[in-house]
Image 1 (tube, rainbow, N blue to C red):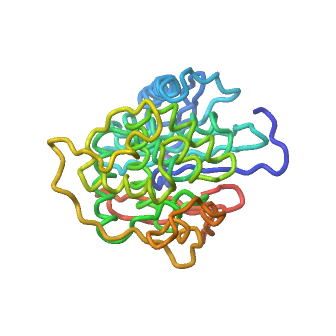
Image 2 (cartoon, protein in one colour; image 1 turned 135 degrees about the vertical axis):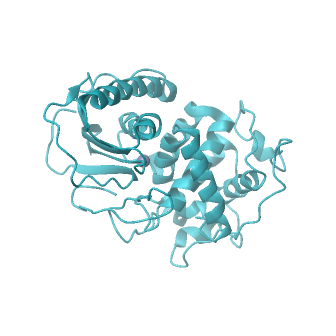
Length: 342
Ligand SMILES: [Zn+2]
């Protein structure tokens, strides 16, 4: 964790595009055991630093069962805070031969959203990075980090998901699971990743979700991993049952003690508060993606072919999404493909 040998790959995690131009520099950062915070005022820096430590402890216990050891060097946090400012963040770090280090976190938003959404989101990226010590599939990484945000931010993702699914912007699971990079339009990936993660967490909890990711990341055979950990025959079967759940208004699910309890049921059972059902456009994928054909409705529905796990080719290597203050706009971040993986 201390060394920085040659050939390192730097990875960046963006929630939304931060805009830091013109941020007034604060000379002395507020130091905690794991963070060094610069913010518009010393009081805010202290509040953010203390909150970051609390989130780090709480979320690492929730996700991995114990508090992460203290990092060898504190993670610098640059915070931009102003009333009404769009919430956003970016965390970069370095993976190298099973080590992760070189943390750097930029966050922005209103004081409230920085403390209750952006910080826990970005801190969760560091927890998952420390746990897996390799890049986590985009949908799962962003999905997991979004589940710890404030309910108002989560509600925003859920509204966006319905909008995307109705307008044909749903991403086929075969494509989504193969994504190593962020697609040109990242918001559908965030909202769909969040929804699927929530679906899987409700069914079998966090340890099973992490075990599922660990298994799938071993050889990218996600169909096998889905079968083993959730009891679905392949990614298309998972996609179908997830979509049914979304259509029915995301009814609260009972925790399954063994894989496949939901897969064995014919339908997700809605609660009394369930909606009458949503109508979505079919989830399709670009014709260029071989991965899609393997689990498309017209496919053979059999075990995953090699194509099922072929990473798609992303057009760009560095992406970030930006939400305007109204939460709708999308824009690309500046990029540095040599050092940042998103
Ligand atoms: Zn993120």
